[in-house]
Amino acid sequence: MLLHILFLIGIAVEAMSAALVAGRRQMDWLGVCVIAVVTALGGGTLRDVLLGRHPLSWIEHPSYLVIVLVSALVTILVAPMMKRLRTSFLVLDGLGLVVFTVVGCDIAKGLHLHWLIILVSGMITGTFGGVLRDVLCTQVPLLFRKELYASVSLLAGAIYMTAPHVGIDHDVGLVAAMATGFTVRMLAIRYHWEMPKFVYKDDWD
Image (tube, rainbow, N blue to C red; front, top):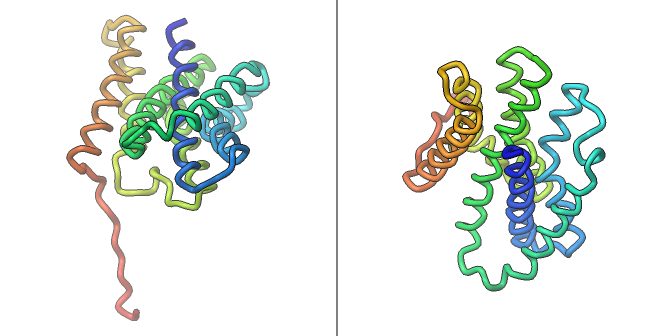
């Protein structure tokens, strides 16, 4: 129940973050709604397709689409009153990242898959909606930048999976995984923590 509630919150905040990005690209209301749906439900859709899990979550539960669309439209209405859209976007995106990661891990775990596949499923769920959003908005996806993003997803997933094996209650482990992942993501933004970059320059250039 707790995970389901957090998932509903997650698709709402991801829709809001997507709406802000679309607004910065000066899209019309339809474009905002499309970007919101792709962002909030795209990662889970890709996960389900790869795992052969049908029906897709938003087809089985059309209410998810309603939540996403309402969240996007509300964001359009309240955005003029938000003075720091960039900060709001980063916070919402961080929340969506860790919530979706844990949800993805939980679904893959329920299919009794290998632990590595569970981790990857969590990362896909947590990050690829954002990748699709950024591609459609013609910007380099956060996943491919030097920021701590996919690594945060893997950290949250690893904590969630490890918790039961060390005697931690499921709900406590769930909250701990998301709180840790979100905190690391916010600290990485605040203090500019970065992944090592690969820089190659051909001497013939």
